[in-house]
Image (cartoon, rainbow, N blue to C red; front, side, top):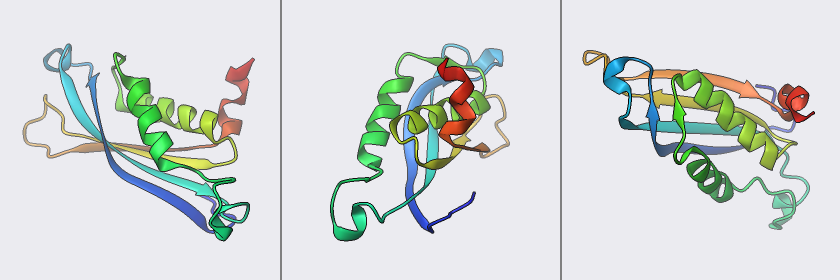
Length: 130
């Protein structure tokens, strides 16, 4: 990810309880996935002078994502990662976001976890806006 300013906000291990998976054993079962977020931003507008202007607020993001996934079902953790990135860039279009999803697959008892990661900016979703 290109950190033009070098300013990054991290939010790690956000626990989301959702229905996720496409194998029979996972259908209809809520599972906890953990989300790590990395948002490239610029602290120059407000945060550098201890002002809220221009702040990428991880509290707002965590609450928004938790509410966003409530009642939704995803077959793929890849789809979840892209959907979360889309939601974050709607809130903070100036940020570039890296979303990492970690899941403990019910259908793979010998695997501790699986993970996917995507990097997106608002420009990646521009075609969807119309």
